[in-house]
Image (cartoon, rainbow, N blue to C red; front, side, top):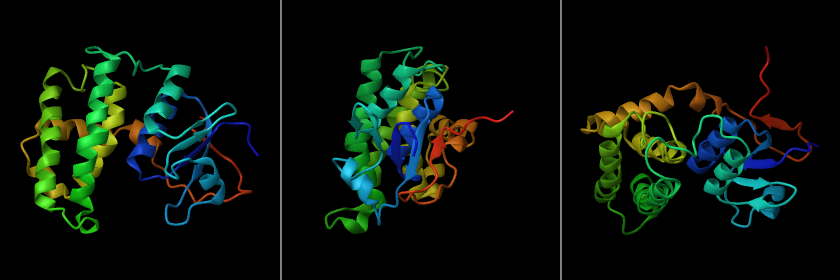
Length: 219
C-alpha cells in the first residue's frame, strides 16, 4: 500500500495526459494506476463517479475532471508558472480550454471515430474541427506558446487533443497551412516534458507494487 494520492490513468487518453503533465510539472507525487478501458478494475469503478480517466483519489476528495486535477497539482507547486501566463488571464485560458473540450473535442471524436456515429461525415467533422486549429495557429503569432513566450496551463491542457487530431491523419494535418501550429505540436512531442509522462505502464491490479509518479529522480 502507498500513502500517496491515487491517480487512475490511461496512457493514451488526452485527458489523462494533461493531468499527468501538470502533476509532473508540480512534482507532487501520486500513485499511478494504469487502467485498461476495456477491462476496468473494480476498485477504479468504485472510485470514479463517471468511470472515466483520469480520476484522482486523495484523503479528502475524489477529483474526476482532468482540469481540476491540473489545478490541484499546480496549486500545490507551480515551478514553471503555468498559472501565470505572460499574456492573458486564467479566465481566458479557461475559456480556450472549454472550447477545446467542447466543440473541438466533439468534432474530433466524430472525425476520428466516424464509424461510431450514424450521422457523422468525416470530412465535414474534420473541417469543423479545423476552425479551432486555425484559431490556435493565429494565436501563436504572439509567441512560441498560446499565451506568450513560455508554456502555460492552456498549452498543456490543449496539446494532447491537438496531437490526437493530428494522429488521425498525419499526412493531411502536415499538409495544412499551419506552420506555427505544427511547430508548437512538434516542440511538445519531442520534449522531455512529454516523453516523461508517456512511458508504458502495465495494467494495474490490486496488490501490485505501487508505481510512484513522477518517478523519483536518481543521481
